[in-house]
Length: 286
Image (cartoon, rainbow, N blue to C red; front, side, top):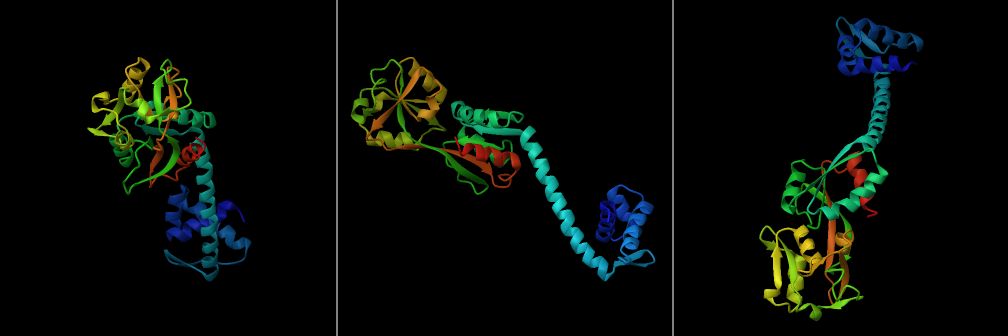
């Protein structure tokens, strides 16, 4: 049995006619007829009952159709698998993130594994990047906000205690830890997004006695990092978020058990596509 013969038979059986089968395979009707007749002669059986322009499967043809359906189904799955390998090796992944320092350590590791994949990173607000994920403007999202949308699934990629972020020359920079009361006289620079303070920041304020006059709000975290570097105050960031900046250090806060969690979010309809699956796996080792 030749592959072309089985393919011709399968096409005729599925379309219900030799002309339609020829059209579906991009061949001529006589070519399809020759392939099917050769298959029938080789095994001395009749696969179709021909009644004018109509054809019906014989019992042997029905059994063969069941087998050919499984055969070509496996062939299609194999092709999809091989195509997926090529997609991971040379695809294009759009990543949304609410702050650049959070994205690049993750994408750098992925890029080492898949150097031919083109990564496009968009930095915007938490609300906007999740909206972009829902409408498929981005493929994945890296954020510290747990998604609460039925179309979005997520995985935790990092959990880390909140630390005190200081300039390297600060009096507390060389200490192994600080206690909350020691912070009461410092200026605390906090991030304000969409008119709201984050849950972690609010919990910290509730647990401490920092005067309200010492709390300064900013609408941009990069500005906060610059302000810290120039001695304008301190802030609450995870260590991973500031490790890249040699002007800053992170010091553990004794008595503060607040945990900073980072999430990788993805649309549930595309989460198992090869490229997104590869990125999800890569994030597990972050």
